[in-house]
Length: 247
Image 1 (tube, rainbow, N blue to C red):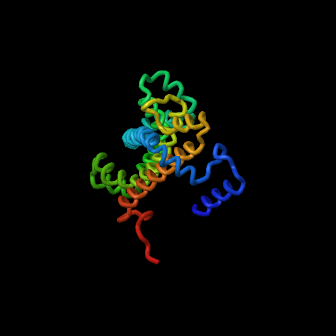
Image 2 (cartoon, one colour):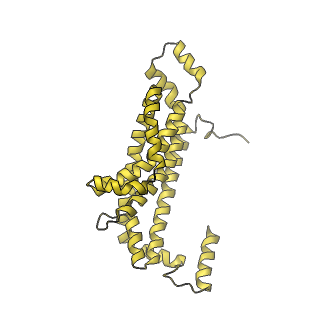
Image 3 (tube, helix red, strand yellow):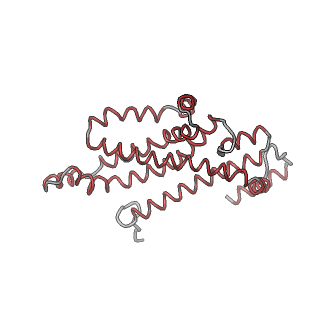
């Protein structure tokens, strides 16, 4: 990473690249510091949409996956709709969402939710269906209820799958929020980082564009790191993917 940044700086200086074409790292950092009062509120708006969509996707995805696990007919009936949402590009349906939904914030939230929802649903459903069938038979032999089997066997078995889907959905919710902001294209006090990028491009303020992109990348890295830490803390004492191995 350090070598890449150094090469970037050397290229800009050696070939005298205009800053409105490709700013050097020093100009990007300077723009980040100088425009921080402008970028920080926009970052909070984008982060609010991202985390809101992730929470809604988690609740809806896990709840629907549990429902799927209880009834194969329900899964066969409704899972195709989830697939349709996943394979339809959000940038195609976002304009319709903003037409039918009067609130811009809710429209952005729906767009980000659509992108983040499927990984949680599919991974959790797979995890719930991956519980050892021998253990299922044992639970049945001892007269466990469907709720007890779900709570003590299927949910713990699905936890690693769910956490894997959650890490994917964390990045996708950020991508969905940014794409939705681009489509919405509305500025003002409540605008996010995507609009700041558009605004900077119209003004040929390329250093500010790079600064906003840097903030988006750092936000995605932090979300992934936090969710990875949560995964490690929840699985470190019992699951093979997180247990420390000798040697």
